[in-house]
Structures are given as structure tokens and as C-alpha cells.
Amino acid sequence: MKKTLITLILIALSVIAVVYYIMNKPHKDINNETTINITAVQLFNEFTTNESAANAKYLNKALEVNGIIIVVAENQDNEQYIVLKTNDEMYGIMCTLRHKNINSFVGDNVNIKGYCSGFAGDVKLTDCVLTNK
Image 1: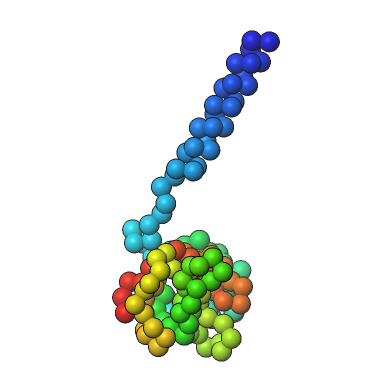
Image 2: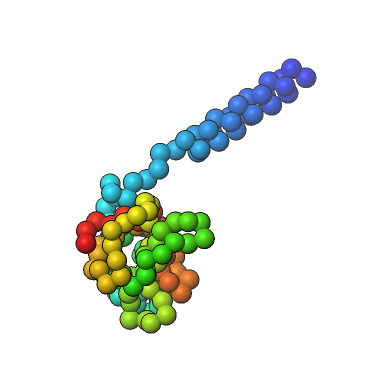
């Protein structure tokens, strides 16, 4: 009975330690990442031409994308995002920004760093920061 109780306590402590580590794990900083440089048009074309190959090449990787802003708005979670222009009139590169209140406007040509999170009409980038205007 004592061995079982000690084993359960050790398992519980191990689970608590793992959860604590995961919850306090340092957040990746896009500014310290080596990025793949690409234009918005090239990135979108790769996803629309061969999504599985583009996923293998870009998914969960740090990208620096150059393009022209066509939308500056907020999503339902009150996060600011921008959309970069592509050759498709309906879809673009949707970049959810890490910080609000950027000083960029529709028509600005920008470089933006972010993590590629996939393709669903738009190519999605998360945790984005503008690197220049």
C-alpha cells in the first residue's frame, strides 16, 4: 500500500512539473529567428500551386514577407492584422500582428516577419512584426 501511494505521489509531482514547464516555457521571438525571405505574391502562388509542397517548405517556419498592404483591421479577438496583396483579388497573406497600433496604412509596401500557420484561402502568418516601411 505504501509503495502504491509513493508511486502515485511521484507521478502526480512529475505531471505537475511538466505542466509547470510547459506553461512557463519562453515564447519564441520572431526578431531572433532566421527567416525565409519571400514576396507575398510568390508565397501565395506556391500555396495555390502545390499546397502540400508549400506546407512542407513553410509551415511553422519564420518568414519575412514583402508586399503591399490592402487591409488593416482587427479580428474577433481584438488582434490587429494586415493583409498583403497577391495576384488573387479575393485572397492574400493575412498577418496577425503581435502588437496593436502600427503606423502602416493601405498602400504601404512593407516587410513583415511572422510564423506561417497554413493556408485557408489566405496564407496565414502569426506573431507578426513589421521590419520596415
